[in-house]
Amino acid sequence: MYTRRGDKGETSLFGRRRVTKDSPRVEAYGAVDELNSLLGVIISDTNDAGTVAELKAVQRMLFVAGSDLATEDSAQARVPRITSRDTLEIEKMTDRALEALPPLRNFILPGGSRVASELQLARAVCRRAERRIVAASKREKLNKELIPFFNRLSSYFFNASRIANMKARRKEEVWKGRD
Image (cartoon, rainbow, N blue to C red; front, top):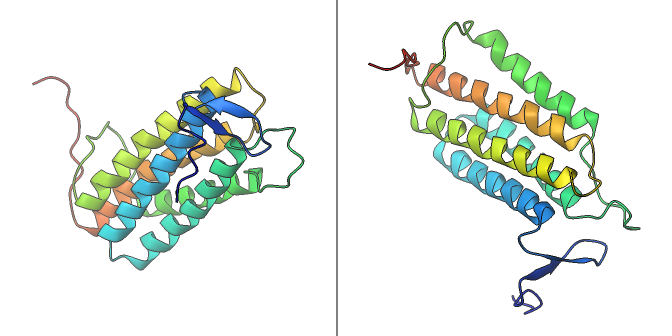
């Protein structure tokens, strides 16, 4: 499918306003889309049913976040929005991971198992999405819950990575500074 409406470097927000494809808002929901696609890769690489269930729940929330970002605040259409309940759900998922993990006393290097490494990459992409949302929020009115949601989500990915390494019996590598 193609419409040709974006051939001149513009796209429509939900609510009809046209914006350039490099606008801060489009950059923000593009980073969210990239993160959601990365979760699809991670899901395909794991056989752990609990991890799959959690990541699919996060994917559904990311679709909400994407539609939230792609919709003008003044749009008449009703679209789902990220709420404090979504942020609390991410916090609960993170708390469950933290209960199962030993306390962290040092910085650790990203890596270990393939899934753990991909989850660390998801953390970094999530941080980029968060930065793009912050940048867009300085120019336009956005849902204020988006920033706390993505802030918590990156913490979730960090701890999910540690859980993945624990399940794979891969030791975390402590960062010791320069050699």
